Image 1 (cartoon, rainbow, N blue to C red):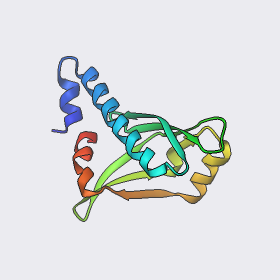
Image 2 (spheres, rainbow, N blue to C red):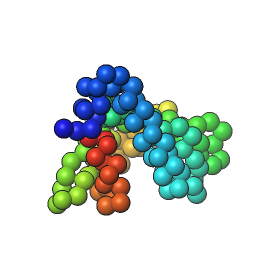
Image 3 (cartoon, one colour):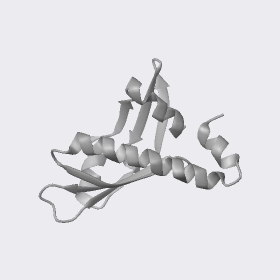
Length: 126
């Protein structure tokens, strides 16, 4: 049984699931901040493992206002024994119309192989 399903079935399980999502989101925010430090910072990261959606707000260098990106649905799959995070650009919206169109035109379906050292995180997302 997946951890998320197990937590939801417990008394107060929705609260436990929300706490899990917040904890994972904070870890993701810290990780992404390391990846994009040269360009700006992630000021907010929201994760919903039930809906399999996420939202992040970026404050990019040279920009006065933050940019919010919503991924309305992600999927997790396995390929060649590795976990893969799949994001379809058609299910992404941003706070900037031009950026949404650019992502949809150029990104398509992005398959991101999860590094071995983060495999434990994938188990929490399932």
